[in-house]
Length: 226
Image (cartoon, rainbow, N blue to C red):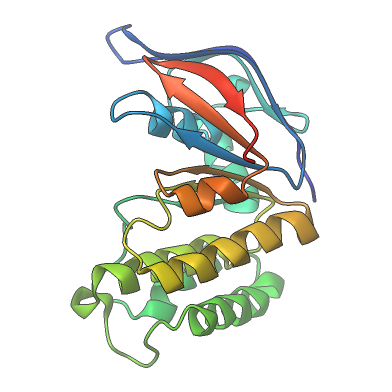
């Protein structure tokens, strides 16, 4: 399934009512790659997590295809994420007592039986391609780069239509980061997955179709990399 993104008059607020971010109009087509950049605290991660349905206080419109996440309750948003979204968190959020493969195949706990084999095979394939240690070694002994690669494999294991990544190359050496960039961009373009990534990595941003500047809680200029 391919899903386009439509955002209109979006407002994200804190529990006390303070406005965290506003976005007037924004559109991303299936297969498009979009970078989000801006200074620390500008609202980049706030916007990214809104796109995943992880911001509880939203108004306006934020639609993936025909599904407006603003109108869904928490349970329905979680169901949408499980089915359609691969999310790479900046702080990994791994289970320390599990192996790389155990973490990367967590989606099998929520997937129907018919989909579990495909998830395991895809997770193993991505872990191998990113050179993550195999075997029973648990991730509590992993380096930052190994943990990042494990988190990326987990996000891609169920072949999501939407890939949302928060600084996906931040903990990787240059060669591994470039390999990941090639994989993510290639996936988006060949399988019509929408890729949106927060990043300060110029190598990644230069490969995107568009780059959005975010400052002071607002989506600003759109830049097309040369």
